[in-house]
Image (cartoon, rainbow, N blue to C red; front, side, top):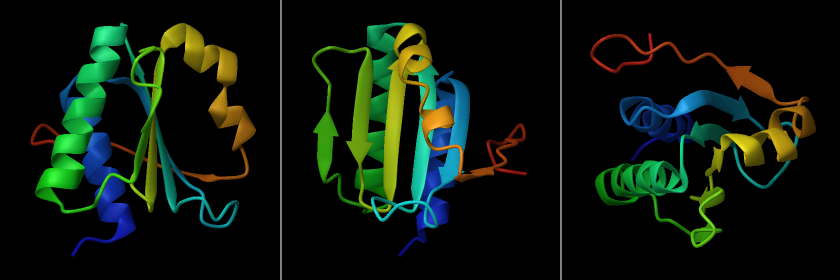
Length: 123
């Protein structure tokens, strides 16, 4: 059994491993009841967005056992949302991320520093 923070940091590591850009992990427990963490990332193309999401789903759902409750926006490929209950992952193309600016929208959330070392661990 993993804690929500362990799930969120592992998902962030997966995004980093797959060359996701601008990865931000926000703790939203004091701001909303939707989830404990929001993970935001940019992919370089709709194909990259899909790959990032598929990779996170494989690790979080299949390896860590946290069920994917909902997947939204997969067909468009410019913004995909993965809802794992305790963690909501948002993967955007650059233009879509700039347009929606979730970091500004959730600016009351606490940003969790992510510093992955060479072995992929959050230092």
